[in-house]
Amino acid sequence: MASNNMYEKKPASFVSPDLSKLQAVVIDIKTILYIALDADPKLARSAYLARVGMKKL
Image (cartoon, rainbow, N blue to C red; front, top):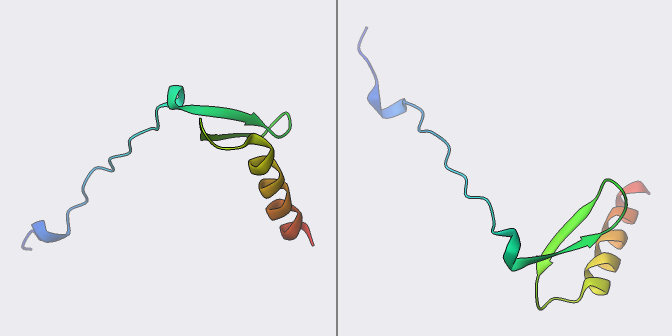
């Protein structure tokens, strides 16, 4: 059998965001959103709750 080097898997590279450049918005005990420092936490919270509320219908 011939080896197909073209199809070898590459290691996944994932870079985690720098949390010092983000602010945490606590939704509930299990859910924390991280948004930009200049973003509005109230708007992010209401947008998240509206989106999650639509999924439950």
